[in-house]
Image (cartoon, rainbow, N blue to C red; front, top):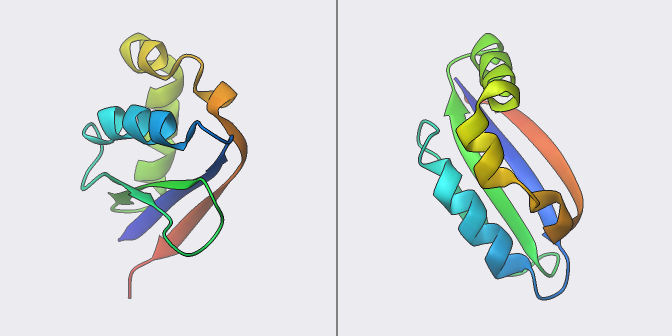
Length: 92
């Protein structure tokens, strides 16, 4: 099993908006949840979910690119953050 984390540093004043948007779509993902950083970078928002394997992750990425409802919900989200990274971690 893998944990996928999409980590963002939101623009000042946009962290709560980004967290709310990600929380709305995280319900579409297995064990999806949104976290905000308490001690690290200011305005850091993380969306985390599980994938059984890397192929499942790739399938989800393809779905994201082709799902009109999801694309509509996420429209403009790139305006809310400055930088981002993705972590794919294997659960041992």
